[in-house]
Amino acid sequence: MRLTFSKAGGSQFTAYMSMFNLSAVMAYLFTGNMTQRFDYVTCLYIGGALTLFTVILLWFIDPDETDRVLEGRFGDDDGADGSGADEAVEAILEVEDFGEVPTIA
Image (cartoon, rainbow, N blue to C red):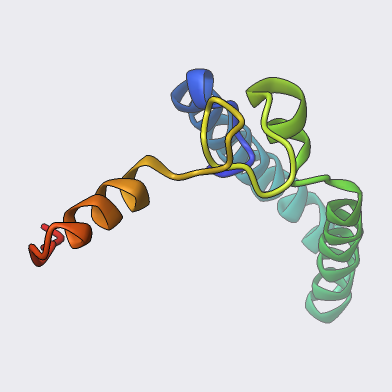
C-alpha cells in the first residue's frame, strides 16, 4: 500500500485485487490449453519463465515516485508541510520535557 496515492488508496487496492483475480482466471484458462500441448514439467518451466519476466519488470518501479509526484514529499520528509518532523514524535518529546512518561496505546 506504500506505492499508492493516499487519497485513492482504497480504490487502487480494489483495482490491484481485481487485476490479480483476472490474472488468476487467465492463468487457469491458459493452463488448460498448455497441459493439452505440453507435458507437466514443460508447463512448470513456461509458468516459471513468465513469472520471472514479471519479476524483472518490478525493477523498473520507483517506490518513491508516488511520494514525489502525488504526495509532494521529497526524500525522508514525513510531514505533510515539508518540515520533515513527525507530529507524533514531537508530541512524545514535549511530554518527556515535562517529566511525564509517555505511553503508547
